[in-house]
Length: 224
Image 1 (cartoon, one colour):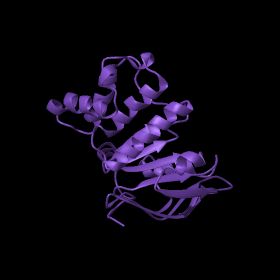
Image 2: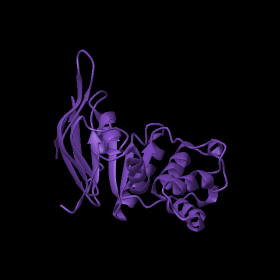
Image 3: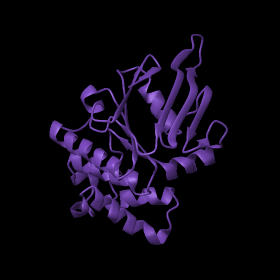
């Protein structure tokens, strides 16, 4: 395997209380640069906890998470925010676009958080929208877009800062079958360009489109 982008080492995530809940148990997972991996499992299996850890929105109770070689267990919140903004792109089921900003503005906002030089922001946003086939809707507002177009805009926002890892959480959940297929085609295109893609889903058919599948159940993972 190439140099790992994701390396979870003996990771456990336990939520406290009188009866502690082990959301993740003894997880070891390595994802190399340029891989396309799906993490699949039913509701309550631990997928959301895994997403939060991979996206640096939560920390393991025990164990270590290295992203692109950087150990993260002892990093400050500011360091984690910087790594998140510069290394990771996110695509969610709900799009999370600002309705009163144009498509271009929505994509440009991600360049601000990633500390892209001001002189490059607009052109990079335009290039990202061309990449996802949305150049004709660049001045539109999200409320005027179809579901598929909104997700394309969200993908452009996710990749505009040239992340090393794309995390996609149930990205087709709000789309019809045809639009969902288009979005899955887009992830394959981005992966073929060298981007590491991790798809988190409950849908086995979508999961099988990845090059490698990781199954999660009761907080434990198995790999194929």
